[in-house]
Image (cartoon, rainbow, N blue to C red):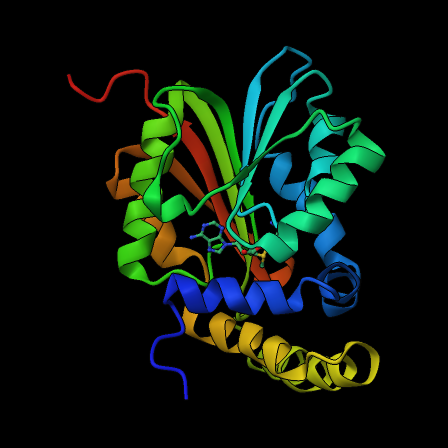
Length: 242
Ligand SMILES: C[S@@+](CC[C@H](N)C(=O)[O-])C[C@H]1O[C@@H](n2cnc3c(N)ncnc32)[C@H](O)[C@@H]1O
C-alpha cells in the first residue's frame, strides 16, 4: 500500500524500476507524439547558436537532449535527475551520441544545490506530474533562482484532455493498454499504471502555471494536441523589484 505517491523516495524507486523500459515505452505511450511534443515545447524558446547555458531538469535518460542540441547547437547543456537507473542510461547516451559533453547531475531538485542566476534556459519535459502542490512551489522558486534575469524556460507534461471522448480513449490507452503492453513486452505493468494515476491527479499544467506566475516569472500557458499535453513557458523578469 502506498502512503504517499509524492514521496521523493517512492518516485525515485518507481523510475529506477522503469528505467530499463522507459525509452521504448515512452515512444509507444504517445504514438510517437512525445517526440513531436519535445520539439514543440522547445520552439517556445528563441533559437540561439550562442554558447548559452541550458539545464534540462528531471532529464530522465536524456530524451530531450537531441532536439535541444539541434535548436541550440553551441549550448552548454546540464542535465539533472535523481534516479540512478535513469542516469545510467543517460550516461551511456551521453558517451555514445554527445561525446560526453553533457554535464550530468545526480541531484534532487527539491533540495536545490544549483548556482543562482546561472542558466540562460531551463527546460523540463514530462517531469511535473510526480510533484504535489507544495513541491511545485519549491520547483518554481528554484527555477526563479537559477535563471539569469531575462532567462527563458519551457515545461511540458502529459495531461487529461477536456474532450470526454478523447479523455476516454486516452485513458483507455494510457491506463489499460499500456500496462498490458508493459507486462507483455517489458515486465513493468504496475509502474506504467502509476504514470496514468499521476496524470489523472495532475489533470493539466494549469495549477503549476499559476504557481510559476505567482513566483514572479512571466509565464504563458500552452496546450498540445487538444489537451493531451499541456505546459507553460516564459522568462525571468529583468527586475521584479520596482
Ligand atoms: C517522466 S520522467 C521524464 C524524463 C524525461 N525528461 C522525458 O522527457 O522523458 C521524470 C523524471 O523526473 C525524475 N525526478 C522526479 N522527481 C525528481 C526530483 N525531485 N529530483 C530530480 N529528479 C526527479 C525521475 O527520476 C524521472 O527520471
